[in-house]
Amino acid sequence: MATEVHPEDEILGKAYDARLMARILRYLKPYRKLLAVSFTFLMLQTGSQLLGPYITKVAVDGYIANSDIAGLDRMALFYLANVFFGFIVLFVQTYTTEYTGQRAMHDLRMEIFAHLQKQDLAYFDRNPLGRLMTRTVNDVETLNELFSTGVVGLLGDLCIVFGIAGMMLWLDWRLGLVCLAVFPVILYASRFYRRRAREVYRESRLILAQLNAGLQESIAGVATVQAFGQEAKMYGRFQEINTRYRGVQLQAIRNNAIFFPVVEIFSAVTIGLLLWYGGGLTLQNAVAPGVLVAFIQYIQRMYQPIRDLAEKYNIMQAAMASSERIFTLLDTPETIGNPDRPKTVESFRGEVEFDDVWLSYRPGEPVLKGVSFRARPGEKIALVGATGGGKTSIISALCRFYDVERGAIRVDGIDVREWNKQELRRHLGLVLQDVFLFSGDVAENISLGDERISEDQVFAAARRAQITPFIEKLPNQFKEEVQERGSTLSQGQRQLLSFARALAFDPGILILDEATSSVDTQTEILIQRALDELLKNRTALIIAHRLSTIKNADRILVIHKGEIWEQGSHDELLAQGGLYARLYDLQYRGQESGGGVQVGPIS
Image 1 (tube, rainbow, N blue to C red):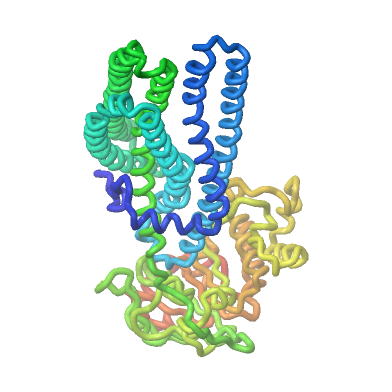
Image 2: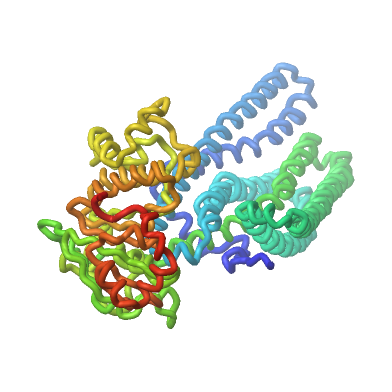
């Protein structure tokens, strides 16, 4: 079983892309005053770096050479003051840069999150959760590193290099040219390093994507792996990818281990040339000794930014690749948008009409084929049929999680495409078999934090959903924290909580997707009572696999291969002897006394 690598994971990115950088900088525009402060202090910090060696030159030539102790004391204090000043400006520059980057990345994360919330379910079908998490968290953090270390650091390094070059040429152009003579060779070595680093970076990204995908798959399927005794095989597969990743990382380490000593060699060669040539001029009294000392300090400070080239290059390249993926996500259009002028109803009645509805998740593969039916206000309609027949697709189309290709779905006579999505969904109460509970307490999971739902409404909804006795036994009652996805609650308790949630939001149309299965007999009775309360005065669409649970529905639609094959009451469909009758025979003929959760009053 091969691990698939998504095309987005192969995005390599240049070390600098003007188009992407211009777009990234737009997020800094609201904080341009802070950027101006940061840039000002960056220049001051560069000036402090350039001033230190010059102070040394003045101290040597002006005071040490003349045995002026008092003047030397003043220069020493001046040097210390410059060091302290450099510390202050570096602190302000670093803080403002980091602060600005964090604010900008906060805005970017919020934009990504808001954009994801607007996407239709088909988008999430195509994009795994782990990849979207990486975009929102890891890739944004990589961009933050670009602001805090990459761009500012690179700008500071360039200022230092050109500033030092200028100072050396100003102090003595002959010594300056000697010191700069080896720079073409350094630039060639840096170009060779960048090319090697780019190749290693690309390979490491591809292997890391496989490593993450394999790890996620192995952990998610750990129960299957253990059940079939495949631990050794999965260990071997992970070890193979992990070994490849270690190899490519070691290659990056080797490149750095070669590049850094090369820079040190050039630094030592430059100082050697300076001592040989500059020392000769000093002996001839053509150059003051202090100038020679200042040049040695300048050389040491000039080569530090070059040593940092490896880190800066990797940061810039990673940031460009991350920004490419982020903007690809943000440029994905919202396929199911709100109309410019959405229609509304004065009084919601709860009528649902499907008119020749066709729906496909993939082009040319329709999952709904000409589905037509009408649910009158307050009518209870059950959807039954084999798995994959199209029942859930009908619900998804009604909620407008997907847009239909042909036909129309109308709620209270208005096409769902003409509703505001959020307003439409406030009238739809969706209760699923797999109940999703969020982090937070019990009350928050009922109200979902909606300020329109008061505490009294939460209590009333829990009471009507038959779950208050259970909640009152909890140590903190309604304030009891719910563990991840409600792992400490039983299936029935989670189901009753979902009923309470639906009652709290009080929708006009209720959608039950096999919401009454997998519970014990005692809980089944509670669920039935809660269900009776939930169905009062509401239109309901009920998906059921256990046919005994929908005997009392007003109408039953038999969905098969994306079409409505039969419809009628339970007794009418049994009398027809068609698909419903065959399904019922398979499940419950001869076992009718076993019953189940009835849709309607308990007899």
